[in-house]
Image (cartoon, rainbow over all chains, first blue to last red; front, side, top):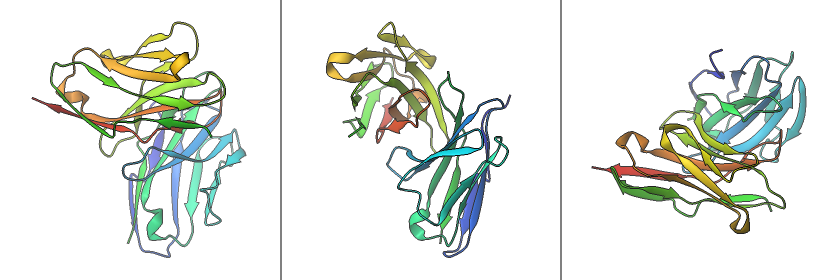
Length: 112
Length: 112
């Protein structure tokens, strides 16, 4: 098992464009989390899935953000009509019921 | 409100000296407690965790942390710091299966 994988590692996009990030969790982990981290801050929770069900969404997750985990395996996070304030590191983590969360390397988004 | 406080934004320690990073949490019960480390541009690596039992927990890279219920604290310690320990350190907590709540982090610099 190679751990949590996130793609792409870096994304530069123009304001107003849509972007999509992918997270492949550790196999057999049924829980998957998305976090956002800005400079000088700790990660902030965005949303989480148990299997394919999206069980919780943070108030940080505006209407322009959507996440899916269609088959309970990989997940995607889409941001529509990106704004400069969306520039951040987007982190994915996975866990099962009895273990701590394992994080991926993150996707750094820069909106220009 | 549930929160984590890491009162030290930045700490500089001489190589070989001891280290203590402070963490206080605000939560109505005893949560699961974690310390993560993050190198620049990277994801988070788990250093150690406390779920229950012995309040002094050992982690990787020679780190340890002590849970003190009366003080709602979970301070991280290392007896002798190495230059490779320079990174950002995050304290976090959750309840089983829920999203982690992170502090804002402490940046550790190591001087020679």
